[in-house]
Length: 507
Ligand code: FAD
Image (tube, rainbow, N blue to C red):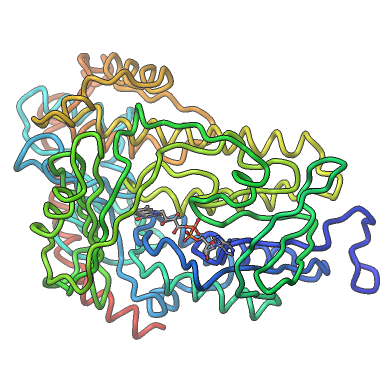
């Protein structure tokens, strides 16, 4: 409740200052302005067009659609504004061995038969000689593999019809779309370079930012979205960085845009290369490509050449080099500063988790929005949740490297590395029993873990004894019926290109 436009709580935050106008900054501005509407809280965003943004980050996971839906935006609107295509999953090429590929879809596999999770029946069939891969039982995976796309039916009728989807979009256009919303809902934008961060002498809280124009911007809560530099949390407040480079060996990338090479696939393609992997992200007007590599195993020139030799369309720019240290800030929130996006940490681009972590960071900030007393209990909870979530994502990414079957020094080092205990426990249970350890704050569901285990052909050593309750004949009939039903559904859906035209007509 507000009195005369002022928050009723005398201790309430009145001024939020967001530093940075990349994807993180404008997502935070849009979501916080919607969340705090009518409270009288003033939101200011400072960005420097001289410095610019990181300019990558074009693949998402389905949570992005929930994020913009909460702001009243439709899929069709966002897709048109951001040159976006549909992403039904990620196609992994050559990660296990040359010539092998599989799709990690968004959603489930198969249909329960007599109460056990589907994969137990699939494993039984496989043990009996049935070669059908797990992906044959996922609508999302099949649509992605065939280059088709459709909207999930609101009432799919059976478990076989359940899947989800995300977007590939132009990161700059998405930030602009968020900016339009934020400015419409009252966020003030300042284009200037921050030259100084002033801390309060009493407690070291951030008091004000000095701009290159000489203007001073004061605030109560500061949201650091300044990118890898982490201007407030890292530099001004001195929060250290937890380096995970011993688990995630990739620390560099070259990114290049290219002309479209044929009809857009409805998935991201990630192909294993000599010391890392290459992404291909189809947009409507162009494609985004990049090579992620480990500088310990490949030099810049070789990485750049390997990328350019494998870009499907004609490059439209010089490749841009990016460097990163996989890891996270030891705390995402210190004193009166919360970091989001690259300022809070970065693992690597695989599985497109960085924008999703921005969404969950914003959501957590909304749930735990502080007063000006910045109660330590609130800060501790925020940090615990974000720390755990980041570790769970880290483990999921490590899994992809650990299970590879490729030759070469980089891939051998990935296979040989000791993994975190939390991942070891997951792998051990999966191999022993085909079951999933579930920790708190998992971004990826068991279906995603299953997709990776099965895609890498890392299967449990024993079958669940209860699968014996379904006879071989019954199992063969059921699995064949599922595959037929899914094939028929895929044949009835539009191609991805047709789907984009349908979405445009709806915008
Ligand atoms: P930035 O885009 O770097 O923005 C920083 C902002 O701070 C800019 O506006 C800048 O002007 C401002 N700033 C900095 N210093 C100052 C100053 N002194 N004064 C004023 N303003 C300042 N994520 C995904 O989810 N999917 C992907 O496919 C994906 N691919 C990636 C590939 C690579 C190679 C890399 C490196 C990252 C990728 N990411 C991906 C991560 C994604 O790019 C970022 O999470 C996302 O772009 C958010 O960046 P940001 O807003 O935190 O930082």
